[in-house]
Length: 418
Image (cartoon, rainbow, N blue to C red; front, side, top):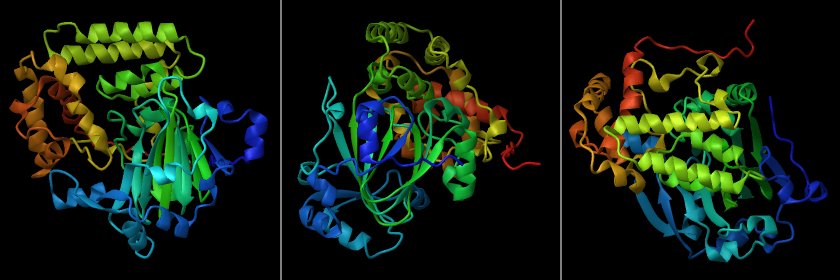
């Protein structure tokens, strides 16, 4: 089992500071902000500091799906009121997720020079919740390095390098399997088998993650953490234009650090020029994009990272077995389908009838109501005929794989096998 061993601030300084971590594997750092006022903040200090700061609570995806609503419900409150409730209630089904860190809290931290990137300042978001909350496996699409800093409570984090994400049966930048259904022992075996790591972080611990790193987070008790996101790689902007894809995550990870910036920009421009040229069908455009990304991975020496070696999975590959068993709890990033960049080229293309048959077939084999709930969750029309061509093309790729693969797949881990 590959548990990350924390290093001390002195060890980090001896190694060359935060710069020494950039582009490398994840690392837990003890007390990375010990020179900042924020280092000494406890529950009482945080409650007082943020008492009247506005916050937005969201419900977990599991709860939202069970309620069969179109969008997760949100509630406006203050950090002070929520913390008072969350610290005295177990398994509270509401949490603060990726909320911009309040300025009074952000001002308590002095950031190292490495976090002040050449293109834009570091960004910071807060995550606050009770025990039992889960962030399913995903990688962040903004192409930044991340330092997750734990203020209160304990989290367990499972991580995979970008190159191993294909073992999660990726659907865009989210996992297609319910990793959080497994117990800790099974999760630890899987990440070790897949070349990953796990770590348990507590108050005053920091966790560094590079661009494209897949991660899954468990809240073991009441937890308050903030992250600092900094230093994007050049290909990051492709993630805001193109359909999010685990191939882009690998490309971001492989082009961080000392890569040739001019070459990166040239390749990115050529890719976008090809992507926006006229195509007869949106499906042809999408398939050409995937082929171009695969070619890039081959150039970067990562062509082996795009396949799906189901035999190594520690869980059943249920996301596409028998029926289109896509679970919105694990693919919450599907809103990428509605990105403005995709609309720019799809509006002039008519929806091809050939795309509709497998979409109707997928709807037919799903349990009653699942298609409607799924499409509502994605913000897409329920009727396939009303889909924009780009969204239809991407859904086509998923549904045809699922429909054609009727035989159940039971892919067991080889770890511990006789």
